[in-house]
Image 1: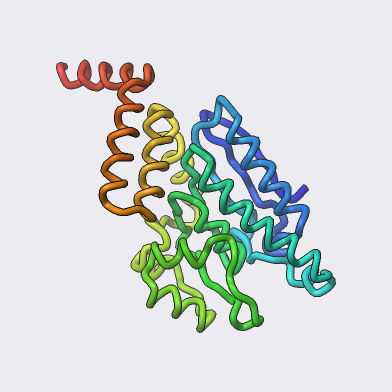
Image 2: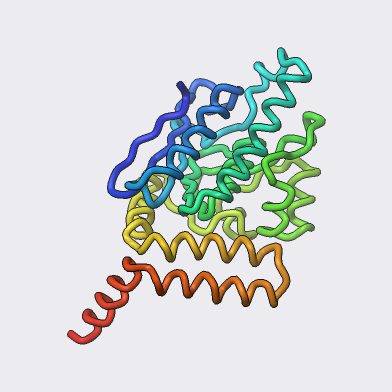
Length: 251
């Protein structure tokens, strides 16, 4: 299997491990990744999920050699798996961090954008080669990318097939942090463990409320925020964190 998963200190690490193909996805890889999303959802130890790749790429997306031999039915199956992954990522009530090493292209960028936070290595390159090959994006990318960078930049990326480097990706809002290549995994681990130490109820409701607000009117957003925050207040874990915070400020 080209997708590995380990859990440590409250963090599930999902690693795309097919470096000889720049971590390109075939149908079994997509199925394995979807199964891991579902596994992490029910994992009572993991509070945060991290996705990264081995070698020179996060992922260059679809395996073009495998695609060349696909039937129309196989292609439709692969496309439906990207859609299922997008829904699974959105419905996973745990934060997903993407540690973007090297190339994140096409379907690889789609997977990266399914993450809630993206940290890029300085050598990272992000882009959409779809137009050059005569394809259009899947995996919710047209929805996600437009909301992250705006319609003008999103269309520029999609129509030109130009790649953005890490600093430009941060400037337009594709990633939130850029670190040196050798520091990527350590920096992501530190951030993931920090988030994993927070009460799960708050993390779940932060993710839920932000994504709902992205596609809702203001009045609906206000109602949801109130419901989510009340749910947080009722959580025993939140009450423990609140008391610990107050105690620490008394010193």
